Image (cartoon, rainbow over all chains, first blue to last red; front, side, top):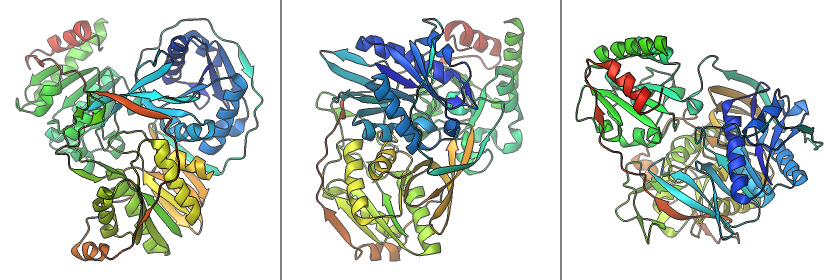
Length: 320
Length: 246
């Protein structure tokens, strides 16, 4: 049995949870077994996970689980896996999942592979799964030798498909240990999709010349429903907040569409974004290294091109 | 406070990535190695700042062969008091975590620091593993941290925001950007580092449960398709019809 841990935010599931259910379903198919989902704390609509491949949903309803403590969560997830008879546990490669994966590996005596982005293969009893390494500059196939296995799934790795009906939700009685970490405050920006989950990203760099010029970037992002990002020099100069910094030392992302505007494309920046499915580069310097990594390029002054692109996007949105 | 900082050796950020032995080994020829930036810039420096403010000691730990001593000496030059190297090849995250946990348990550290991930394998696993092996809390992605006695208040990065948590020592914390500012070692630090103790410890027994068996470079991108800057309708059309990105 494969068990996925479906995270909630304020009691609600996000697309990442459905993606994880679908990945768990695919993994279960490769192993010739079924996939169940585990839900912790307050959660609405857990049965929906069934549509994306979870044959059953286990729910530990204790509201002590509404705040995150990696130690308590690990104990609960490992106990639930045992009760469900699951030997493969998959979490999201999120701030929560990353805090859990290593703990679960130790607790379950399981081989672990973090940040996987492809469905595992099972050939002749050998379980292998692929992950990006060297900050996206290469891939590695990992072999997991142990009976128990734990994986974390990189966001935006596959498009969730509906494969079934809503699942039955069963309350699972697992002891919830007292948290050793007290959560004092949770602050999230409302509105925009956070960068690691964003499918559309509009990113800009030093070519913008100054923070006062970001209006055109904001407008384009607004039109597209995209999340804004920036290069490292821009974050270092405090032109933009640090959480917008994408690249090797910032956030690594893999959206469907990445606009790089006025970013030359240093190797460290490319490392964090080159897994994006489609890359568009807008730069007035035709020699900018980013063009070599781009699918589409526009050589021109961004202060002319971006407003024109925004108008074209608006027209497209109005027609579609 | 006894502080332990785990440091890893990684290829320099602009290193050319290639593989040998039928794509089963990372090709280290011509590659410059550095201390993992998250370990050096944020984990180590914040540990030093806390020691400077509250007293105590900062110990570095690295799991690796004697060739790693140059990286460890740099950490001592930046200001750590002493270092220990567990003399073995770091073959997997779990293997490394077991080496660190064995030493940390023996020496009873109050806080174990490490970077949020290494820039080579990007696993982000060792901190959580060490914490579970020691059965202590783990706070990941710390971008701010203060200590008052044995209680720490830590801001950790989460998707689209942050979370402020309170935790009592002992615990493990992983460092993200913002936790501290990079320090460049000065001449005095470099001279002093040569006289600071660097202990070599034997490895404890540990198994690898998952290992990388094959590497591949991503497929080469085809040529970029250039679009006339006057014709953004065409770009939008390509993104919709050809790339199916919007």
